[in-house]
Amino acid sequence: MAAAAVAAPDTKIEQFRDAVAKLDEISENEKAGCISLVSRYLSGEAEQIEWSKIQTPTDEVVVPYDTLAPAPQDLDAMKSLLDKLVVLKLNGGLGTTMGCTGPKSVIEVRNGFTFLDLIVIQIESLNKKYGCDVPLLLMNSFNTHDDTQKIVEKYSNSNISIHTFNQSQYPRIVTEDFLPLPSKGQTGKDGWYPPGHGDVFPSLNNSGKLDTLLSQGKEYVFVANSDNLGAIVDIKILNHLISNQNEYCMEVTPKTLADVKGGTLISYEGRVQLLEIAQVPDEHVNEFKSIEKFKIFNTNNLWVNLKAIKRLVEAEALKMEIIPNPKEVDGVKVLQLETAAGAAIRFFEKAIGINVPRSRFLPVKATSDLLLVQSDLYTLVDGYVIRNPARVKPSNPSIELGPEFKKVASFLARFKSIPSIVELDSLKVSGDVSFGSGIVLKGNVTIAAKSGVKLEIPDGAVLENKDINGPEDI
Image 1 (spheres, rainbow, N blue to C red):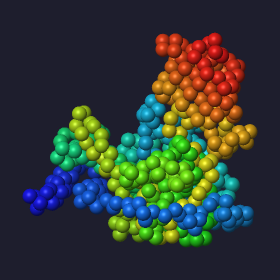
Image 2: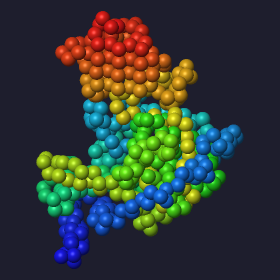
Image 3: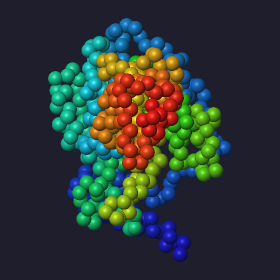
Image 4: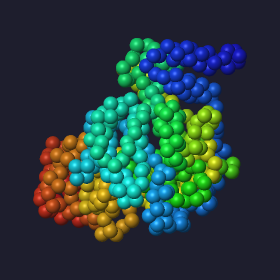
């Protein structure tokens, strides 16, 4: 019996390999990558974290941002640094969760500008100011590729080189028999998935872009999510990495109660490592969520040396933790195996974290985030979203909007203009609520429309520490 049980994974991987070999829609590199991932998953090679070996990283491992040397003031020195840099935005996500079609990066964020517009304007102003040549790379998925190709045409007259490449396309795996879903006739988009942003390293190499960048004398890539408005080029960080020959840097920032599930950096057996909540034994989950014990979390702003990527990809050394992601397609239970780019930190030499200000982490994941960045809490300068100095509190207001606000179009239709929230601590809105223009919100405000009742907040209303259930409470 024992022998048969051990043989089962081998049989599964052989059957999977044979089925994948017949899939004409993907490249040989994609087939090999997919088979390798499935084979690692079936072998159960996942390392268990020994909780007692976890150590808090020192300031040498997670460097405080304010201890970094200032960036050089000399324009030629600045140009020389920036000419070694490439910016890469992860552009594989769709805007579906916010009720939009197409890539998420084309949602309008502020003043009619999309995420992608702002990214291009930022790099344009950098290239213009320093006379440098920082290119922009967009890693698309098969879901966003065609739309992105059309969208980038509008930037053809800018002073910035824009390159796109696709991350891998892997077949979803049918849970019941561990065969690829497309081999069972599901050949449309639903049969496939992009295997997480850990795929950025092999895809950058397989696309040929990595060799091109190295031949141009580029040394570092700054990788970030396209929806993080705080992920802008920081010359101090770049200068530090080049001076200290760090192959990899993860930007981390202090946790708040909203970030307790975010991955954190630890020192483990002499190396810096990302610890995700999924790796934490059940009995230690509450400890992991503790802001006192694990004080920082991963922003997914990553700086990585290009030669090191080349070396590790060619050696097939980047074996990041596998994240199993179960889904259902037309009633069939399937599995997606994914990896995260942050988990690669432990494979690079002289890898560090930098504990950066919270301003470098400003993601827009929902319309509640859109409310923040469209309000008077921020202004827009050269494509950069700058926080209003009139906001005294270091943290942003907590905002919860009901399902009526979930889609961008519904959200916009419910505001004549975005209220002033510079002095707001928290806002909770539920039910059929709409806002007039020139409204000011302060302190803690809760607005809950009764079921079946439309509640309109009138133009010019000033709401401070209010609990509103009907017009009489305004």
